[in-house]
Image 1 (cartoon, helix red, strand yellow):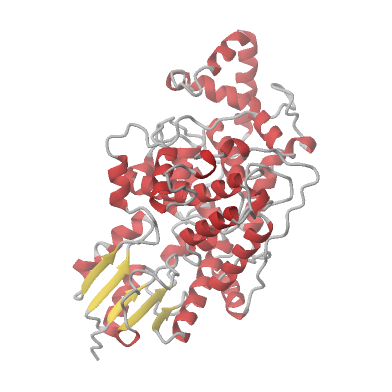
Image 2 (cartoon, helix red, strand yellow):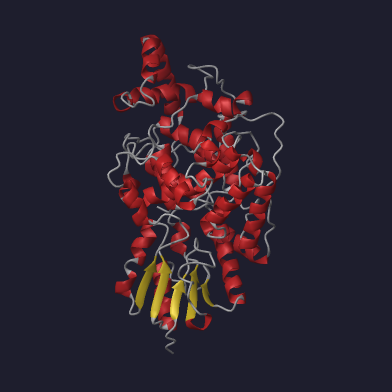
Length: 521
């Protein structure tokens, strides 16, 4: 029977009650469609916790909508009639409900959006694709800002967003505290007596337990463990996690946001990125709450500014950059990096203590904080010359907060410099000295960070110079990194050869992983 209702598909990262496609809708005139589909769970072999988190959050959100009186058509993964794709499931829903219109908020990922944009030609009903206004900067606004700029400097964009939102701004248009950026105060190494409060853990309820069992059954060959699953899966739980951060960790978040400690996976980080990216938390509300913590004297400005910058600066900037450069960004390889991803990225079996610990946390928690991702895991991939596509797949697979719009620019452009410098002003390459300064990893490592070459030397040391040497033609003119070549030249040929030979010996010892770890091919 023809209902003549409006069909509203809600995707797994759109779990927001104020979503644009729901605003203005009435409950007696709307059918909400939610879909667990095989294509999305397997286009890469996502971490088990990531799949469980998304499916559980979707099921809880659907239940909340139903409790509020909405009609929800929910298709589970193991429904025998499940078509396996968004387009296939929308087609089935159109047959079931015969809607007069279909309203959907634009997708976060380029490939999904390409499919959605074909729907007006596939379905008889009118299809309305709405902008995702949960973000503060629209696609057109970012394009206008980026137009005619040679370098898309995030700091300039961030200041624009500060002015737009009024966050940490005085009435005279000047930044609170006198400076726009307090990054120089947020680079402290760890202290031995650091004792951060524990991050809240959420015991799986019946719904989550059912999803965990489903994931173990259907995706048992995927990376990661479900044993420690404790993510917030509802907006109430996400708010509880936010409360804990603002009560116990924001004060020291800033100074120690770049610190790394073996076996301490969270330190003072908010651990809210999964909830933000799912739609369970409003990013602007979190920023306003952080600003109030500063105004009330509950948190220092460097911590608050650093938190706000990650959200209205980096998060918004990365999303804009992604849409500006897709789909070309997927295939960029400006440094011609061709080496396969080492197998230890999946097994964790390496004597490099820093990498082993970051991979352990990634496997057990589907999480590692941003400096572990950038300056340990990412730095290794950069200086070892790992193929960008394999690195992109790994990051997309292993992290619970990883969606392509945020993962791809961070990996391709920020970590690997594969875009040739459109995003980053220099490659973030570093030797073992940086890791030693910002962590306790090197103290009990099998390798010696003080040894530069030869047997037992920290592999980051020769790999750094191997990277700098092979990319000299491109990097020597870079004003932020080019002067390092005067140090290289002063070493002399014999010392240079020792570095290059040590690096090559290490690279030759690596066992590449098969692509079957990341993709069903």
